[in-house]
Image (cartoon, rainbow, N blue to C red; front, side, top):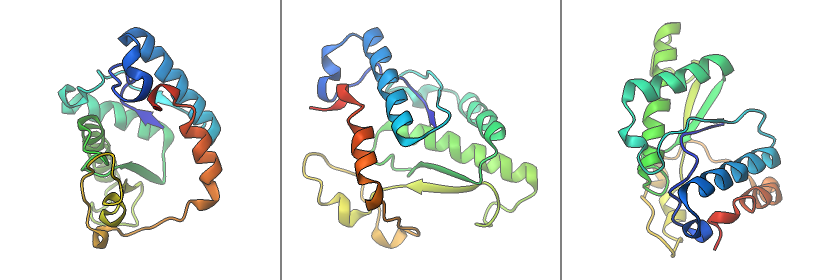
Length: 173
């Protein structure tokens, strides 16, 4: 798992009640705990400035993600949808870096960029418009349902997901 920031500028839940340094330590510990619950073996935090990942130079962000992908040699890379799920600029920027890194790996391997079978395969996580419209506490970018190419039923993992979400105590109201 690659995360761009430590979340030191958090603005939801209890995040607002801590200073930046304390919040960065708390949010990193929460992320580490959630990764453990989910069985994630390796977590990389790039340490970019929270809410300002889009100010990180494209060459730097891509190179750092590329180095991690080369090390991990994944079959599949999952990034946020280019809309950033919630429209968050940090999510969008990390997706740009991940997309460019995957494209570079494909170029290096001689795989056509449009060949869905080539490694690593890049998939974007998103919330389809039909579901996003049901969210009433915030406005989410609408990705047309017909643009969704893979749908995964994760209901068997609902309890693990709930436990992982509850690790992020500073983000819960």
